[in-house]
Image (cartoon, rainbow, N blue to C red; front, side, top):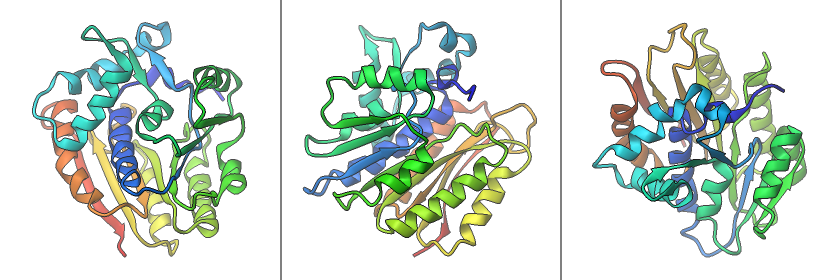
Length: 280
C-alpha cells in the first residue's frame, strides 16, 4: 500500500469527514451509556504540517486553513473548529492537523472506547506511539475490513464505525459495499459512516446505487465538491454515506455544508448534497 494520508491532511475532504464525525459523536455522547468508536483505516492520528510530505502538496492551505480564517461558522462547524484548535493550534498558528482518532478521542468520555485499525506498519507504529498513554484506545495492526467481523457487535451495543479506505484498489468501492452490508448483518443497530472520493468516472455513483439496492434502510448521503463531478483533474469532491444517522443530523449538515462550500470551493464551482439515499 503506497497511500500516505499525510500528503492530504487537512484538505477539504478531511474537513467534511471530520465535521460529520463530530456531529455523529456529539449525538452518541448525549446518552449516559458508553459506546464504541471503531475506525477501520485510522492512519497515524496526527499530522505535523511542517513535515515534508504534508508541505509537498500543502492541501491544508486550501482546506482547514481557510475554514479557520472564516467567520460565522454554523454550530456544528464551530464545534469541529474548537477540536482542531485544541489539538493543532499553538500561539495562534496551525501546527498540526488531527486525524480521525484524535478528533474522536476529543469527544469520547472516560467510559467510551476506541478501536483503531491500521494495516500499514509504519502508520500503525506511529499511531501506537501516539496512543501510548490513552487508556480508552486500542490500536489494531490489521485489515480494517476483517476487523469488522472480529469486533462487531461490541459489548457496549452502541457506537459508530468510520470506514475511510485509501481507494487504491480497483475494487475498493465493491469491497466497501460488501463490508457495510455484512457488518450491518452482524450489528444492525450501529451507526456507520463510509467516506468516499468523487472523481471522474462515476464510481461513487455506482457505489451509492449498489447500496440503495442492498435492502439497507436509513441511508443518508452528505457530499461536498469543489469542481465538476466529471472534471479529470483529480479529487473533485468527497462524500459520506451514513447508515442509521442520528435524529436531525441531516438538518445540521444541510446548515453546515453550504457554509463550508463557500469557504472551500472556487467561486461558481462544485456543489453540496444532503439527501436520503434510502429513507426509514
